[in-house]
Image 1: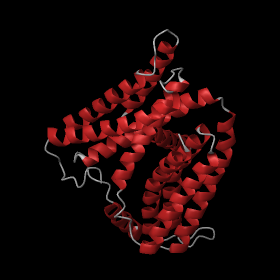
Image 2: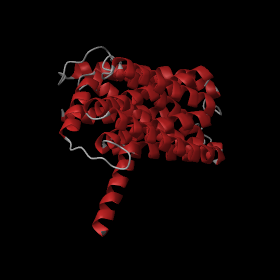
Image 3: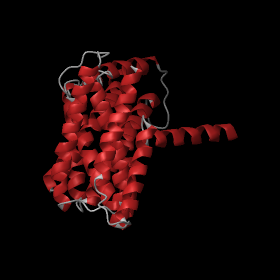
Image 4: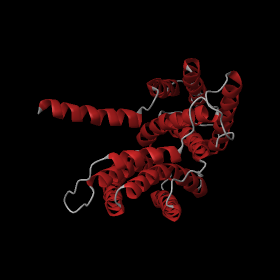
Length: 71
Length: 252
């Protein structure tokens, strides 16, 4: 009974992990880090908007590079 | 973002997911039982409508800045994943999404499964296959339509775009009674990936406290810049390594 509930819970969490995070968890972590950096920098006198495009270029290139190196 | 851009972004995202859902429903209906497959589809649409009705007002109640931070972050993650897959497919490092092959696979699995009548559904397998397919593909569509609509204060237009996409794809599926293999799915995924990444970047950064130069006009630079980045990376990957599978068009 408990193992059946645990299996359903695992399947439920696995679905949401796959739905939100997808194939590369590093991209999701990178987005969170970038948004945190923007939040931090926006409280200073320095403009923070540029962090978002830089993060996109770095995260996308890095993620693709990892796949290409594997194939 | 004007109404046209909102409509196009939501329409394309919904159309891509609708093509995948249609393939599953067609396989369930063709191999098993059309009535059960259609009941499963209808039930999934009812559940999706309930999710939208429950989530819609909840999203409108969240302060815009917090909403943009969370939604922007999620859209950015979704967008980068879509773009990554589309680039890998277009450059030959990942097999193209083949609706015909998926249809054949689902068809074989459906034919092999045992028949079982439950409640008033003649074929439970066809029902669950359609129900799961439509619900899972529809969840992402509902999220995109709701968040785009809420952020742009135009949920009705986003809803119209979503419904229009589903109707067009479903009508095409019914007309040909075959997988929609000719739909340029990877190109659509690439475009949607570009849109999600650009809007995710814009809203996420704004929600985190950044101020974009030119305010909303920054999107006019972000969207083409992300598209150029995606196309550039596609070309780079194509020339950097011998592909595992011959690609077709640039992003087709």
